[in-house]
Image (cartoon, rainbow, N blue to C red; front, side, top):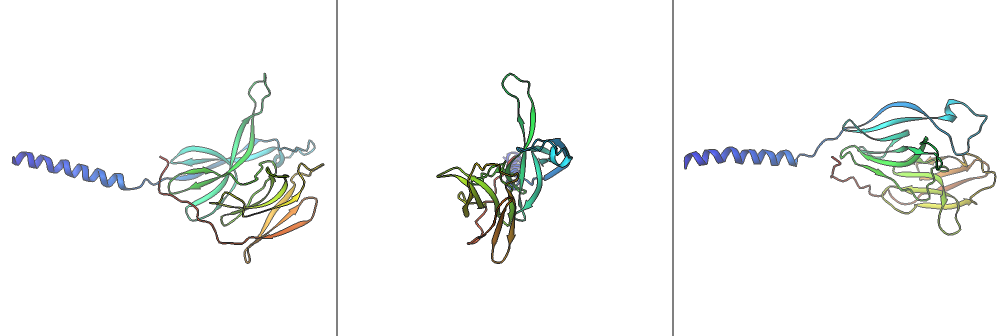
Length: 227
């Protein structure tokens, strides 16, 4: 009986230590790789503009635990001390039926990345159009020109907030599609901190300033991990 008791003790210690190890959350490493230039054709390409800036994108790999999860383009925006947003870069097959595969790089939607859990979430910003919208971030708000898909439609000024499905502010600023529309249609939005407001400038039109009311939404930063 004494021998049985001595054998049970190490077994209990093993299960106890295994439980402690399982309870410790996994720490993830989220990094951006080195940049590389890839060929790019913008939606409204000017054939006379053949500069590197107009015909290439600077993309970087997004790595979680040394495993590449996405390609990204542009700079990240720190939302909180544990999460940031960055735009995804897509490789799209641009071949017509019957043609060989023809890969084309394009800027895609925005991603929300949690450094602690390693979780990556694709953001579905309201009225966001990759060919029209150029999101400018402040705190957890994104301001951009978008294309309304409901009602009468039109070109709209949008302020979206993480954690909400509907736009905080959305106002029609012009018809869409727009005849002889310049590219880009809007200049990057300009933010003001106190009071919180944002100004939109149409490339060929008047400016519009909108107030943003309310406090920041609750961003869901969960404890579950993407292992």
